[in-house]
Amino acid sequence: MIPGANRTEASAERLEGGDVNVVNVVVCGHFNHGKTTLVKALTGEWLDRLPHEREMGVTIEPARAFLEFRDTTISFVDVPGHRDYIRNMLTSAWSADYAILVVAADEGPCPGTIDHALVVSFYGARVLPVVNKVDLVDRNRVSEVADEVMDLLELLGVETVREPVLVSAKTGEGAEELLDALAELEEPPRPSESDSLRAPVESTRRVGETTVDVFGVVDRGTLEEGWVEVQPGGLNAEVLEVESAGGFRPGSPFKARLKVEGSITRGMCLGEGLSTSDGIRAEVLSIGAKVRPGTMGKVHVLSAAANVEFVEVETHAGTEVIRPYAEGHNVAHVVLELDREVVVEPGDRFLVTVGDEPAVLGVVEGAAR
Image (cartoon, rainbow, N blue to C red; front, side, top):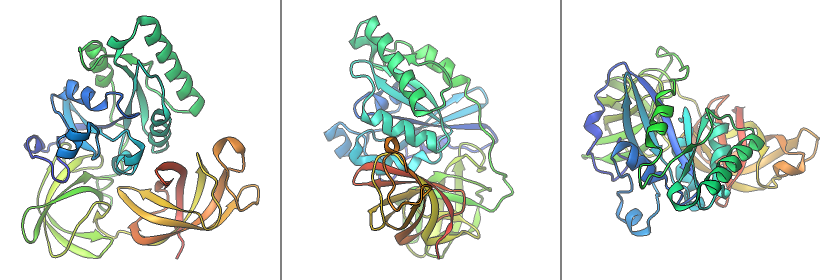
């Protein structure tokens, strides 16, 4: 596991670097459908380690664990399924190549199933559906749920890699079939290693007065020892050492120890020549909210989040109101005003939540100012 903030370092030493294939898999789905237990069954690592997570029995902070297959390392990210913590799920969803969508056999698809399927698909991840807790129901019910999951994903337009794998994370049933499915996942095309560096920070841990460990995934370029800029904020930091599962190249989860005067937090980026803005022009699609000029929410782009106001809205039909997906007039060009600068470039994808509900998906067209 690459630990997050306040996590133990038990598995950090496993990040030894080297040019191996890396596949990033987000493990997502509705609250209490068995995501964390499934990661434990696959990797031997229990990722709910924060005291309040154990007390509440709910994942709050995303965390990583590794599984090695031949010349491939699978980096799992266990994300929260509870809607109250979807903002934390979005911290890591942007970097997923694939998603294991976990659905409990005793409950079937739930609201969190839909939310997570839409989000990971929008960010480009292909979905491996898994029906968990098959030990709790009879075989007919398992088959019904598997069919419901595939029907739902087809309705949502989500690309899948195969039919659902049927498992019990508790008893181990179906584990071999799931491992076989994971072994067939191929690393997707990556940006060039020679591009300018952009490495979003997902979590941090202060280890000294001027030293901090940062954790994230390299988006493009190569992360090496030496000097980098940290944006937003315009800090200069020295990378003292780097550990990575994939040789510090695009797609690689990393841990970097930095020497820096100032504070580095989740949502910042390491890199060079990074663009920042507190205004975004974008094309958006509403998936669950009516939006008009003056609507407030929170925008999630890469690993950052900021409060946001829709200041201009023009739908493709010429109106100023974006309606939920099923009602039409749901695609628009908008201008968003953020309460802070974020690292953002044309082509970046983002999600706006209203309350704790996923509301609008968008693609950045440029800075608004």
